[in-house]
Length: 165
Image 1 (cartoon, helix red, strand yellow):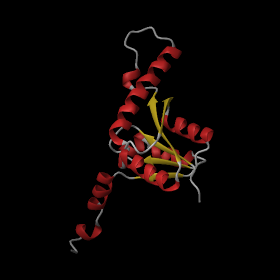
Image 2 (tube, rainbow, N blue to C red; image 1 turned 90 degrees about the horizontal axis):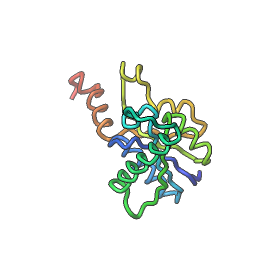
Image 3 (cartoon, rainbow, N blue to C red; image 1 turned 135 degrees about the vertical axis):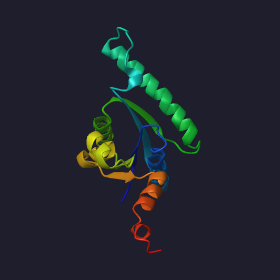
Image 4 (cartoon, rainbow, N blue to C red; image 1 turned 120 degrees about the horizontal axis):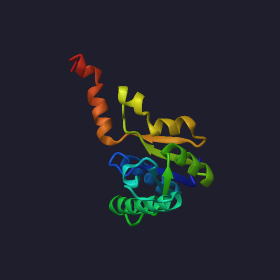
């Protein structure tokens, strides 16, 4: 198996660091080209014009500029200088933009963190990771962030719940 191109997704949260770490580890091992994609949602509160009369092209350009700044800060803070990732910013719906980019660039795998929502919140809000997995024509590696893995194991440990230990 060869992995020439990896798409690592981020929402700039600490949870998405799990995808970044996994994607960089795989990319380094295979010598892959790594893309780090951040999608500014079109309904993002920071993008909503406050009484300004802004045409859609100007608005879109400003949103991309803001996204590039935020992604650049994220990379500077979390990616080592010896690691090269191509920073990519898109404005739109995360699921659509992730799928579109992966298909256009011909990536071999998408790496995405799962926020671990469960229950009603998951049903009502859905999951970007789940929808990417369900609709992507490209293989998807989902990574559960460490704090959620620990919480999941502690909360679901049957032996502990049954006082068998």
